[in-house]
Image (cartoon, rainbow, N blue to C red):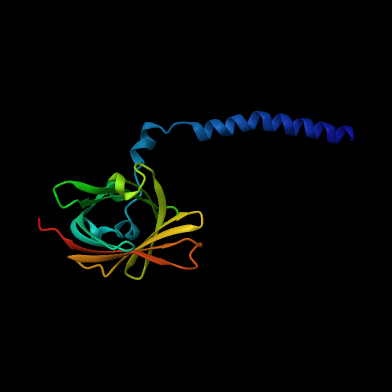
Length: 197
C-alpha cells in the first residue's frame, strides 16, 4: 500500500471514530420542551374505524360442529388506546349462571403497515380440552364488507369470517385447515344480535 493510501485509510478510520459517536448523540438526544409540545399521535384514519360497526354488546348463539353442540353467550367489543386498539370479550354461558368459556382478544392497528393484528387467549372448563392462558396471534384482513381473522400455527390455520354485518346483527363462520390452506373443515357458526341497552 502506498504511503498516501495508508494516510488516507488512517484518516478515514479516525474520522469515522470521531463522527460516529457524534451522530449517535444527535439521534439519542431527548427532544426539547418546545419539540415535545409539537409531538402528538397520528390522527385516526379510515382503517382505524374498521371495527366500529361491531362496537358494543352482542348476544350470540353458537353452533359448534363435530361434535354438534349449541351454545349461547355475550360478545362485547370496545375501543381502547385512543381508537388504535379494539378489545373484545367472548363469554359462553353454561346455562346455569356460570361461564363455560371466556375468550379475550386484543387487536391493534399498525398505521405504518396499515394492518390489524391481534393476540387472543382463552379460559374454558377442563372437559373442553382447550388450554387456558395460552396466546394465539393472527392478522385481520378486510374483504369487501367481510372481516377475516386468521391464526396460523405451522401447517394449521384457523379462520373466522365476520359477514352479513348490519347495525343490529352479524354472523361468523369458523373453519380450520391442517394442510396450509389447501383444504378446510367447518368448525363453527355464530349468529349475533345486538343486546338491548
